[in-house]
Length: 138
Image 1: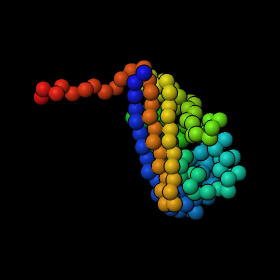
Image 2: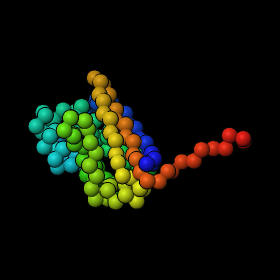
Image 3: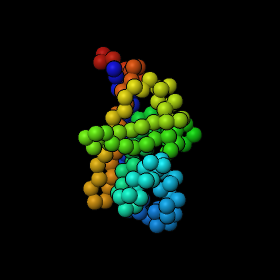
């Protein structure tokens, strides 16, 4: 196995709070998959929860090399947690197809937040290497 993509994103939580203030639940429903909306509602509609998911989805799209848009949408990415509470990425639709086309076989996600910021880091493992080591003689 090799690393086929790495992505990170840092989000100012106050910017997500401002978007929530301007657009209400509509903003959250644009960013979150249905199951995530239920979690967000259950946890009190916090800006930090939404900011971490936003950062995770952006980080994944960067790791895939496409950004959020035509190839992968917010709803193609669902952030869940495994049995130990660690965050897990679940891909569907165009997101899953794009990841498969890149040879991705495993996605690893780390999330963190501290008062003002939410951070996400994604590492994608796959069957194909997408980097080469430069010649040291040049």
